[in-house]
Length: 262
Image (cartoon, rainbow, N blue to C red; front, side, top):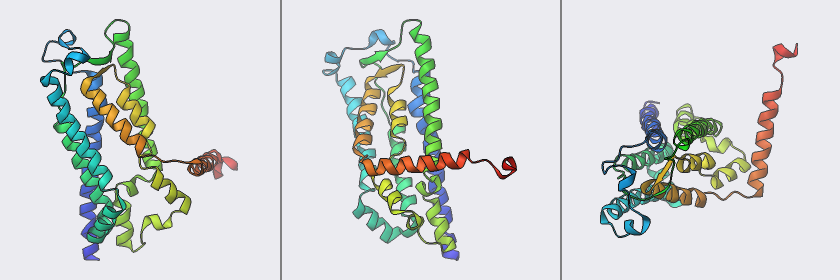
């Protein structure tokens, strides 16, 4: 039992790192663009057009750096999700395989957020500057971001957050209950293999719905949208399973409690 209990601190450390990274990701994708940044170059009037930006190394250099950071994150996230890599990590790390994946993903995302280079002098795809849009568009974006993050946290709980973070695997291992995925139905396993990101629509809302879509934000939104789109492969069978599970949960929620029934 003692060696098994040593796995618990490792899983908890991975969970804490992932949770802190998630909080930082909310700041990076929502609070930072919604609150706005003061441009060091003098504001919107100093921004260049798209054609001039393609010839300006002061704009292309940070964009290339940001692209490299995003490719690092996408590469890590995809490579460690490959079956051969998962089999290798399971062989050497055992029940901590999921915790290792979560920790590495959090570290890669931390690198993106901490070393991200903004491009304040770059062109913008859209910007709410004139009234009343300068007041109402940021407010609308804020409301949509709050709704999206609430939906994201709710969906993660429904999709078994403890298992996604690797805690449940260690918990089951310590108690000798086996692998949690072994207890799930074949249809659920099939869905999980196709749906790597259950919060795709909400994340896309967070990425694109901003008052000002600048050059670096456009790069972030485009690349992550492409990645999220390629990571999904739902078919009609998966959609039927999701619909059946939703109807079952709604039926359970609509059932009267014992006290109310009496």
